[in-house]
Amino acid sequence: MSFRRSLYKTPAQLRLMQAPGLATAASLDAARAVLRAGSTTLEADAAAEAAITARGGRSNFKLEPGYRHTVCASVNEDVVHGIPSGRKLEPGDIVSIDSGAVIDGWNGDAAFTLVIPDPSRPDRTAERQRLSDITEQSLWRGIAQLAKARYLNEVGEAIQDYIESQGSYGILTDYVGHGIGRSMHEAPPVFNYRVRQKGPEVRPGLVVAIEPMVVHGDIDTFVREDGWTVATSDGSAAAHWEHSIAVHKDGIWVLTASDGGAEALKPLGVTPVPIS
Image: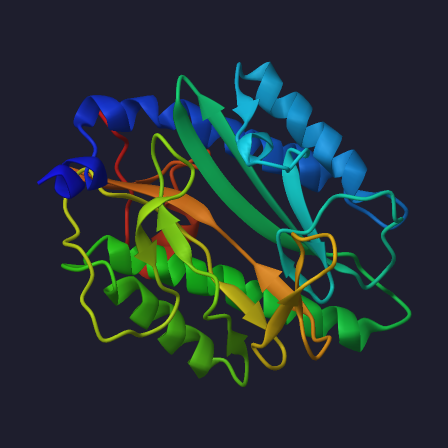
């Protein structure tokens, strides 16, 4: 019974999770605005920090023992947990930014991927943009499935089915999504692929962070010497998209999207409903 109580939030708790979700969204918007050829991921980190502070929040990434930055910034073959640096971004780089905010003890967590255009290599730019687009669309299909699922692990089925329909891409299996609430990482795990177990029941109060990580090549990864950055073993490019989503009595609401996910979910036949 104690596990069930921690897994499903009350309506009042869901309302409290809206502020950190919007602060997280604002931090990603601020980071995205500075990413271009010649800028650095440290500049994106500073912009994200300022956006969270402006909304009365704190970076929850900085609460992770040993981590000192507001965002994780992963470039090219780095998949997740990359450390922001002063390296100048170059045309053709594919950059994933992951950020989170905590307000009044409640957490938000989200990520996006961006490709720096390279006019001299349009084919590579298009290839990397397609990788990002497929990863993003797989996320939204997972979210759309959450809106009608009976059990959580139906989400991973929808993500895998979409990615496999788009070509030969690898879905990371060592890193998955998670529940979110008082802590940034809570039960239950949210798989991005098909598993045998059904997972917990999808019902009001469930809040999860769905985050597919997709690569062009093999799914094997390693952790760099910095102890954080996860990179592909074969050097292939990677993309990472994430949102935090609440299930409530009237439907679902994407906490880390300013419109609750309305624009992206409309083509999928899902209308998110604000939390009342």
